[in-house]
Image (cartoon, rainbow over all chains, first blue to last red; front, side, top):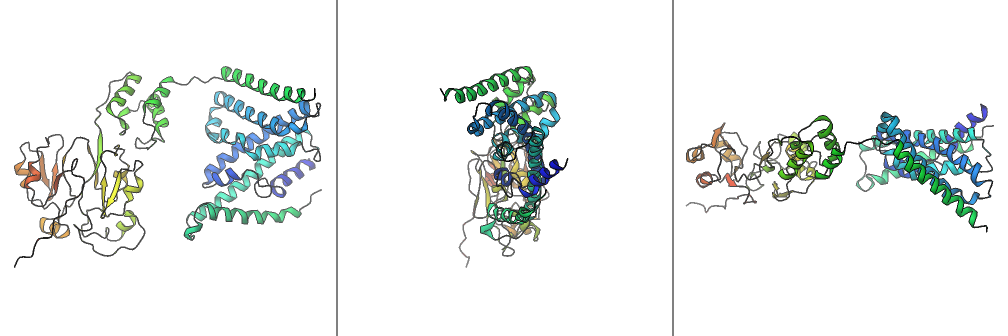
Length: 195
Length: 277
């Protein structure tokens, strides 16, 4: 249990994917204008990250490692994630239409998201030496960390909408500055060591 | 030899996923109503939202699943609408294409300013301040809110008056909803002569407010051979179902308020008369 808690805190705060690893910046800036769309996107990310962590871990363990093909991880994982997301989409459409509607456009959008690929690659890092369960939990926690960052930031951006911002900073520039400030705040977690 | 294993692994994975996905898409196939696809192709695809649905896709689904009449799409031509009705196997509704028309000629030269407006460049904002800066309370404010709202780029602002370019107007009605003064009206596409004024003030006041306002003199009502014109509350109104576009009303109008708006695009501006000595 303790190991899982360490992974949760680590993935959410200390190595938050968006704010300290700078993965998944594209959806972070793209869909953070409204909290409702941010929630939809985050839901899809948590879902896909958890599933892809399991699938890529198994592919790595059963196929790549025995053949000494670790250098193929990136390309193999892209393949696995893309196929998995497609498959999940087809299945959801048939079996769980409400969930399919809720995730909507975001599910296919994150097929090639670097945060998803990043979590798969970090999972199989030999230094971490995760078991399958730990790897899945890491993927899930990283998704939660992404959710937290996205919702925090969408709150800030909703406030920015009504602020009096200098003309040249309106829109994306002020969003980038705000993002960097949030990121600086998360540097504070970098020194946290949990054993 | 060493290159064969990685190539085999990756292509094997690819093949496996490819076959797996193809198989899954067969097993988990969701039967979509093919009529939705057909209607989607027929609709203009501009996603203007004038039908009240999220876009052409949403509208196509609503036609099939909820039985919404296809003529809610104001953009489609008559042929397209009847083609959609054919797909649905229904009688076509009463479809007539409409275009938007600004019923005002109150340019900044025709209607004087009450005050100098220096605020946000938006008609709604200006409308909050005593109904806009134009002398005429009913007329065009001229800050172009309709122009910004138009998805087809069919509105241009000239000298503080909105103009709808008839060739570009698709009749989606977005500008009608946008105008705070309500002076954009949907008219049948073949309508020519229109009363280009919305001022309900009595003649004297209306004339003071704007050089080309309707003063309710009844001349057009009397001259109309088809009884298509009625003056209500000091403002002439043309019943487009009766109007035959003869143009007699425009000839007698002392204020140059009635124009063939289909062919004359620019507002009439009376030339300054020489001072009488």
